[in-house]
Length: 366
Image 1 (cartoon, rainbow, N blue to C red):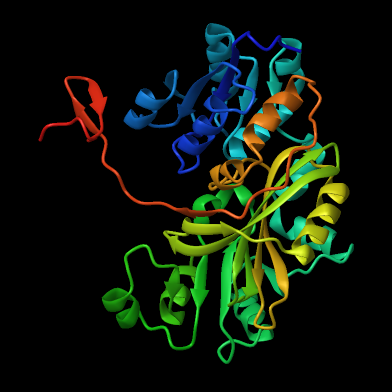
Image 2: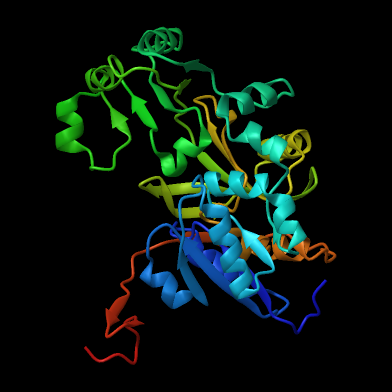
């Protein structure tokens, strides 16, 4: 345990994502006014983080043989107390080397390796959780184009819309590989009327992409047309301590640009079961989407901090800071219930001149 006036040094990896600035704000503006130094890493340079964080390093990808040694050197140089990993490959690599980090008195905000191995395989996750009564979308795992055709036919395509995504968690971060296939979709319609980052796809393009390209590993799934919830859970060795659901109201490139806290008892019950079954710890982001009958179904489990974790923190429960306290073996006292809060994101420019970064503010002259 650290005394309250001593600085805590945190390493935030994969910090190029949209979540990083919010996490830094959560840690720096914690309710106990603790001094926290935040060092960030990513695989490419990020000028904004160089300005916002207390330090920044470019590192190899999480699945690289050089990743762990690089992270260890940064930890030693910066005297890091706690690592908050930010993506699947990095979480997996660090979890495999957890004893090495523990031996150097470096704590991490990740769950045990065995259950992470299940979460990072979406079919294993769905199969395991379906047995304990979690609502799962109808799905089939397909390994080639013939199995893909069989799978979408069983799901009712073309009469019903379907979607598909990579089965491996590490291959689908940031919605990579996720597509929605509808009978009405055509290449012309998508090219001329959809934005370049659209997840819509037509059958002929899908056929061309999958038919003669060798093995694939996809989940083809029923399409869920209802509201989507990004739920933020904080847990202690399989015990759920907090569960805060965000209704995703407006998406851009599948990031939440408008969202609000919205209590959902059905989702809370399922989250509690998931946390207990997988014995999860720290921050977990669990995503649900409603069917046409308004039944919430599990679509994703992210064993890490989610992209809009700033929203539950502003509403009254600072989840990233609770993870820091947990790593330091500090007692986490009950916190007031979260307030109903809505978040709206918008673009704001950051400028660089002569190696200095700045924003336009009320005192700027332009």
